[in-house]
Length: 146
Image (cartoon, rainbow, N blue to C red):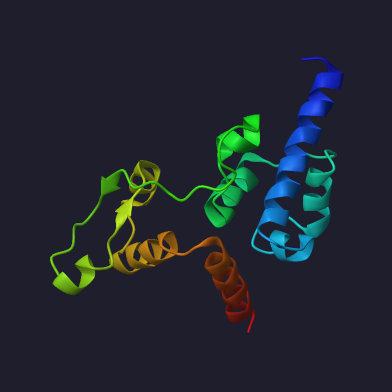
């Protein structure tokens, strides 16, 4: 890939991040808060000056439900909901069973060793829409600071 094509590719991905943020109706400040990077870094992404790390891309997928294929290629839906592919339920208590929802295969493989209370939180998170996830992240930041 020539330097020119690389730059164009980086700029296109930056424009996609900006499109995602604008579609969600978020300012740079609000958009960057739940991510592991600052406002200036997100601004650099949007202008094609820097590229997000794999960790940031995973956060964009998890927090904002960004479709990775759309980010990489510009094809497909911008925002996707997690698609359940595995139902995981190992609780013997009926009251716990209502909280355990279908999870993606990745979640099942990565989080199968979590405690029951952590699994409940994951199930709640899975059912939140993007706006609710942002609000919960903002609340959690305030709660943990004070």
